[in-house]
Image 1 (spheres, one colour):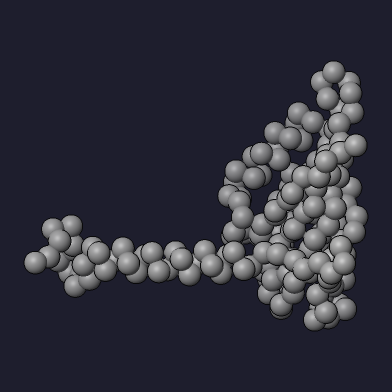
Image 2 (cartoon, helix red, strand yellow; image 1 turned 135 degrees about the horizontal axis):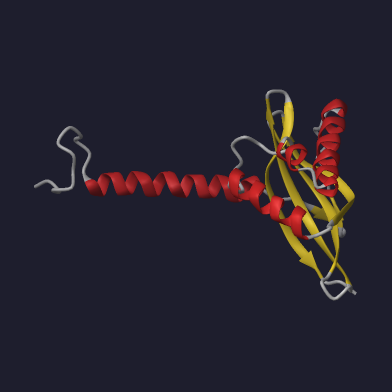
Length: 172
């Protein structure tokens, strides 16, 4: 007996397709879950030990440019810091979101405690403390800090942002 939704030219049944899809999705999810993270020892971030000096320099420059482009509110410059095929966001949506931010707010991003926490020749993760400051409509300043994991991929010899994960911290 065959499922009527099965294509006549394909011998794989609908349930086999579902099982294959589930296995693929589970594998991708497991790979993604393992892809982002960092280690701490005695409350301190452990930097990756396998990063070549020149690559670390290039990664830090790419991260600095990413932050500088945000602070300059330069949409074209910001777009050039992003992967053409990001994994953590939709490229067009992100650019549109930043355009609205640039038009409506004067945000200042400050990064400190920047460490390369995972590295291979095609992907790296930078953990940092990023503080965003803005003046609210009532004139009051607002400041929010977050522990940020910025994932870079190498495309055409350049390190570009492919995803960003952040955990906000309580401000005093």
